[in-house]
Every structure is written in C-alpha cells, then in structure tokens.
Length: 89
Image (cartoon, rainbow, N blue to C red; front, side, top):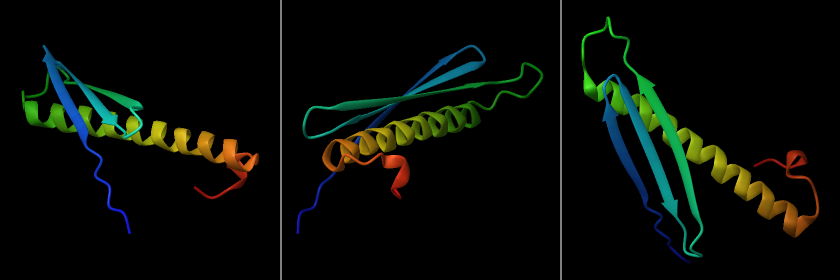
C-alpha cells in the first residue's frame, strides 16, 4: 500500500474591495495545476475580510478541482481510448 501526500498552496491577495485567491497543486511528476478565485465586497456592506477570503479561496479550490478532474479525464482517455464522458469519474 502506498500513501501519498499532495499539498495545495493557497495565496490570498486583497486589493480594495476585491480578494484574489490562487490555489496551486504541485504533483510528483512536476505537473502543476493552478486554480483561481475572486470575491468582491459590495461597497455598501460592512468590511469583513475573512468572508472575502473564504469566498475567493473556495472559488479557487473549486476551479482547481475542476481542472484536476479534466486532467484525470484526459489521462483516462489516453489509456483507454474511450471518451471519459462515457465513464463515471
């Protein structure tokens, strides 16, 4: 049995009412997948930076997850020669 650990680095950058998140997953074969997310505070809302961080981070991680699924589908198709859309991922 093999245990692997993948680490995601999440970077948050606040600029005014906007928060940008960058989620990076580096894999053993040096492949890097990067997801991005953004949140924007309505200027009429009270400033609560943590909420913007949470939204931007969640969106970046969601983007990363979708890209990881797409990479897996491409790898499956290259091995099976069957479109991944007909398989359950």
